[in-house]
View 1 (tube, rainbow, N blue to C red):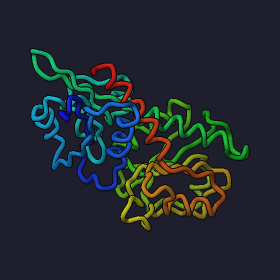
View 2: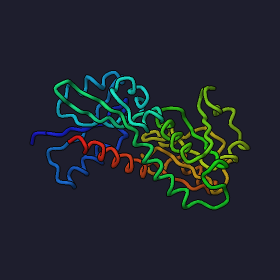
View 3: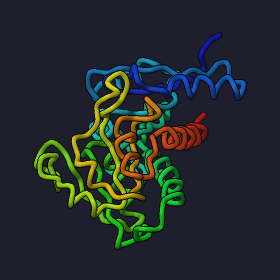
Length: 260
């Protein structure tokens, strides 16, 4: 059958991604046999627009590591959330006689916010509620971290970052167990621990994590990461990124449905 509506994922390395399987199953469930989803591994973000021009039936794209920030200058418009977060994970493609129009969105913010709320609802009441007194530590400074920061600050939390370089508030070498104890939310926004390198995790002082701390890993493959296991040993409330994945995917589908 001819593919009338094509969607896809762009990134550097996509063997770990669940998006193709997720949307292929969704199309089958909703009775859309002429819809398809493909992975497009690109050497650079600059290849996105040529890709769109090469496939005239391409209606929408998801964007993943490492192009969530790099793709922004190549787009014609941004949603409010994408502009404020400084990262894009969804592209809507409009075609007219005048050419192709690409608009970037950030549905990671919606997916993360919903999944985070579930964690906050289930945690112990030993820390301040999500407000000015609550503090969050984000591991990483890439596009995923930008979406996480947007949500946390919208919730009124103070946000700090840790990374390998000194451009963040902390480096992995300078972060101490005493400093870790001051955070009520810790989010791994790095790809560390993703299949197949599942034993990897960020080199933070896990012994400083207090019971009841919400420790959220954006990695969703495997469903229980090394980061989650080490945080759970400290009696933290842990979550993988799978619920976030589903939430952001459904939000992307709603965006694309306005165009097809």
